[in-house]
Image (cartoon, rainbow, N blue to C red):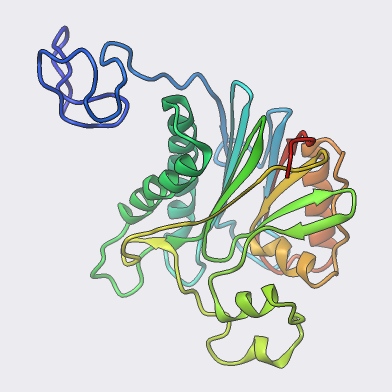
Length: 298
């Protein structure tokens, strides 16, 4: 419902709490009701172009060599000194998942940067954004459907004092530094937890029934979503990488070489895409890279 022109807003534009007509400030968040938040951000989505470049953050997506269509989606944005990206991987076995991934990535990025504009801390912003993404994906299906559209989710928010990543399911994030590339996320599966414990990708346990099964996702049948969140302050400059499993399957197995941690984000994303395709390109491949300046205390 839209407020009539000239009317006093009945809800806080910052946090959504109900407001009394006489209140100047929101009793919940304390912000001035007369100054609604603005998001003066530069945004780019995968629907417009398979390669996106906002200088500090860039991304590229490709359907790969073995897929008929691309069901990945990526969204990137810059808001002042903050850079952000969201990657969503549509689940191929669920019809309509490409649309779910696109809707989720766009909604997630917009909410991530809107939360920053509201003054939310990076962890709070990262926690809130997947709810918007989940709602967008869920709107494309019915919880009573046997197989509604669904997707994974991973985001990164890079500020002047740290890196915050949030994820649902198996689209990972990495830190590319001078000593190589290391994973920042743990896949929501039995195999993902084994890998995080140091088990090799070719270990027989990785191929056991159900080891790779999705435990969490975004979609009409997913239920409430709480992302896993990790925040750290890099001690050196490098890159935050987000990707779909079209790249991570090769990166985790050591088939694809680590990224150049001081390379331009778009150049690094293109290089990693090329390496994934050269390694077989069995799935859709999406890569987002964000430059992060280090030196803050760890």
